[in-house]
Amino acid sequence: MPVLSVRHLTRYRYRNPVAFGEHRMMFRPREGCDQRLVTSDLLIVPTPVHMRDVQDVFGNWVGIARFAGRAEELSFESRITLEHTPLPAFGDLQGDVGFLSGGRPFAYDAEDLPDLQRSIDPQHADPNGDLARWARRFVKARGATGLQHLLADMTQAIYAGLKYGKRLEHGVQSPLTTLESGNGTCRDFAVLMIEACRSLGLAAQFVSGYIHSPSRKLGQPARTGGGHTHAWLRVYLPACGWVEFDPTNGIVGNTDLIRVAVVNDPRKASPLLGTWSGFPTDFIGMDVEVDVTSAEGDFTFAEPIAAFA
Image (cartoon, rainbow, N blue to C red):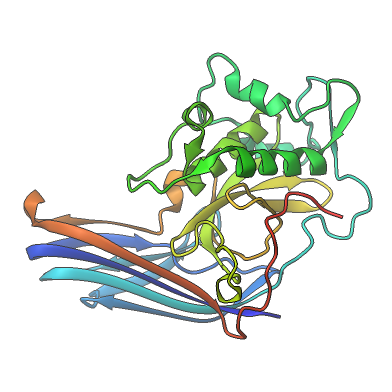
C-alpha cells in the first residue's frame, strides 16, 4: 500500500501585533478502505491556549483553536502520512451500475432517498434550464444511458473543454458562469459537475483535500491542482456506493486524491477559517504551501482518464 506524506503550511502576516479569534481547521483526512491515517502532527505559532478536535455532521474532522495575546504572524503547519490505495472506480462489477432513461431523473430506492435528498437538491439557480440542457447532452435521446459512461463522459467534457485558472478570491462561481466563461478553478469545475448531476436526479457531494502529482519526478506534466488544496466531487451509485470524479484532471476514481472533507455546500469545506482584530491596514498577506509526496518515491503515473475497462 503506497504511503503518502502531506505538508500544508498557511501563514498570515501583519504590520502590527493583532489579536486572533477562534480558528477552525480541516487538515485531517477522512479514513476509509482506501486511505488510513498513519501519523498526524500540527504546529501552530503562536501556541493556542485551547485546542480540541470535533466531527461535523458529515463526519469530517475539524480542529478548533483559541488564542490569547497578540502577534504579527500566525502560522499553521500540518504534517500527515497516510496509506493510500487506488481502487477501481466501480469495483469489480460487470456491466453498468445504473441507467437513466429519456427525460426522467434517476430514481433511488425509497429506503435511500431520504438520506440522499440534501445531496440531490440543487443549490444554484438555473432559471432558463441551461445547466439542465448541458447535463442532458450526456443522456441518449433514445434507450437507456449507463451511469458509468454518462459520468465518465461528463468528467472528460469538463476536463477537455474548459480552461483551468487560479482565482485568489474565496468561494465558487456559479455553474452558469463557469459554462458561459469556459474557465474556472478546481472548485468551480467540481460545483459545475455536482449541479449537473443533481439536475439529473443524482446525489453528488463536494470533496476537498489534496492531490498527489507522481509525475513530477518522471518529467511529465504535474496534476492540475498540485501545490494547493484541491477540490473534486463524489456521486452516489447504488451498486457501488460513493464514487469520486475529478473533472479538473479527468480522473474517475480515487487515484492520487486524498479526501479531507465531504460536504453538500462548498462553503463548509474551508481548510482554515478564523478571525483577527486590528486595523484593516495591518494585514500584509497570506502564504500557503502544500506538498504531497510519496514516501516510496513517485510510484506511478497515470494519464488523465475518464474511461474504464
